[in-house]
Image 1: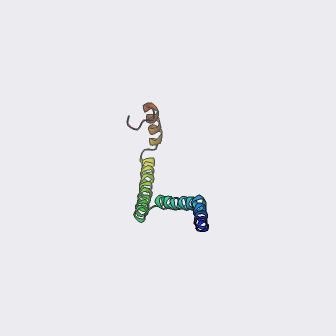
Image 2: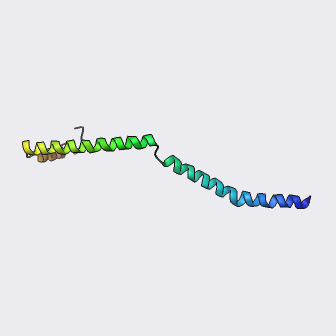
Length: 91
């Protein structure tokens, strides 16, 4: 009976000392990586927002080109107003 107890106890100790901690560590690391990844709906939203930002950038560039033609000094006036207000957007 003593031989059987030793045959069961040694592999159990080895498992609990080396295999189990490694197994737990790798399990939670893989779960963390899965949680960090974006879902398909989040990827779709990100693509949509990227498209909106690109269209907004085009509109801003178009508006700036129109202002450059119609009011050539508009950039300087904006810089002066920013300095006067201390750079605050709400002032």
